[in-house]
Length: 488
Image 1 (cartoon, rainbow, N blue to C red):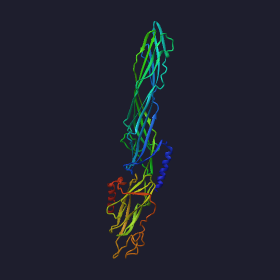
Image 2: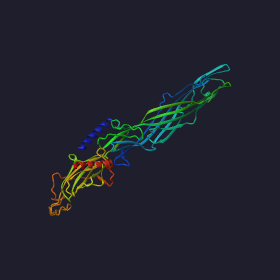
Image 3: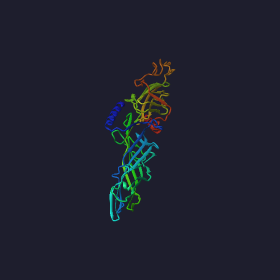
Image 4: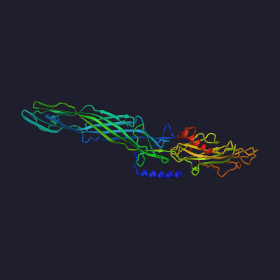
């Protein structure tokens, strides 16, 4: 049975899943608003904060200005926290099994930067005053370890395949202003002066999604490959299971470009003689690319409808047997939904075939059962040789075809006929022509015997449910092919 094959497939999937690394989150896909029977979407949220900006040693100016009696040595190291949030849906649809798109949620992305610098400074001088040499070298105290910082947060539309940039800049800030007597470690007569250090930082941070990877639970990318643009789509294989699960991960990159402005001022007065470094802006440009800004995966569980016709595993023929013209006989079709999403089934027969089928779409809940009756009521002596097409939203069996056979029997000469609904025969017999009566039309060994059972099903009057999977041309092709075979 097909159910047995499903259990084998599920067992295999569970075994594979046990070996694969688990995703960080799992969501259950729900029906899409426009096509609820053939489209489901799983809401995904990706969020990551990177807490360091690895700038390999930072910046070091060396002793500047060159050949000056007063010099400074400045060093800076940048630090940063960058946060990216992305939201969207994994949309899985069919009949193209299984078409998958990463649909962005407009305005639900955000890029935030929080950055600053660690500054250190040393100073030295070597001067001659009134024929006496004075020299000193040492650190400038009181510079904060984390000197200044700026934060910026802006929303954007995921997935940012073309990149999204946040720009930030600090005002010029004075980090330290100290008297020379507080840091010069030697006794110099008439010493005065001081040190002032200003900084300013400009930074652009650009986030770009490189690709969205939809993967099977064993880590292999789905058959359609990765998604590399907002209009791109992929495709996953389907093995007839009640549901499918995929891990979705986003691979992105960050690009930083900025300038750190170091602005020192150093001045001394010794015995009335002035020495100074004028305030000067020392721009230090930098760039950094971080191509490994990847998010933890989200696991999306997508329920799938799965049709099963338990009475037609051995034969696909409904045999009505012999039915008198003017009488009718009913057959039963049992529908099982062995999937996890609502199954929608529509019944189609060729025009002129004397078989009545439901006009509404039959909906069977997940793991549910439905019983549908069809009725053969011949109006002439032509034998019944036709097909009934079951159109459903099962992605790998959107159409099931059953053959219809039967023989119409003319009324006996002079017979008044029987009332099929009453069970009382006319002058031609002791019972009506219905199978529920005693007597009537001769039963044959191939007659269909209806099966009982409960029904976890609903009906809908919309003719669009399920029918869009095949389309009118495909239906006509099946029926026309059947007619040509019968005529041959």
